[in-house]
Image (cartoon, rainbow, N blue to C red):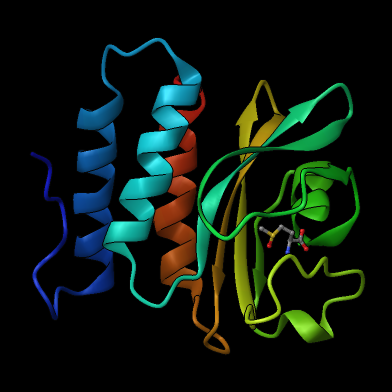
Length: 160
Ligand code: SME
C-alpha cells in the first residue's frame, strides 16, 4: 500500500520535497511512461488539496494529446499555443493562472475550474508533455507550487 500524503500543516517547500521523493520512488526503474504518468497523476491528486483535475498532456506530432489523469473527462487534443496547456507547451514555460476566466483562450474542460498551474516537461529544451493542475479555488497556486511542480517535471523528463 502507498500512502504518501504529508502531515497536515507541513510547509509547502517541505511537502514538495516529500512529493518529489515519493514520485522518485514510484517511477524508479519503471520504463513504461504511461504507467509512470498514471501513478504521478494519482499521487498529485492525493497529495495536493483543492484540485478538480491533475494529469498530463503529451506533445504528439505537433499537438497536445490527453494523457493519464485524475478528474472528469477532458478535452482530448489541444493545438500548440492554445489554452493554458498549449501556451505552456509552445513557449516551454510555466503558466501560473490565478483566474482562468481572465486568461485569453482558456479552454474550459470543466466549468468548476477557477485557477490552473501548467508546467512543461522539457527534453533537450523542448516540451514533450505538460503537467496540468486545475482547482475550483481562485488563486489556488503560487510560486511555491510552481517551484515544486517544476522540480517534479525535471525529474520526470526521462521517465515518461
Ligand atoms: N484548461 C486547459 C485545458 C485542459 S483541462 O483543464 C484538463 C487549457 O486551457 O489548456
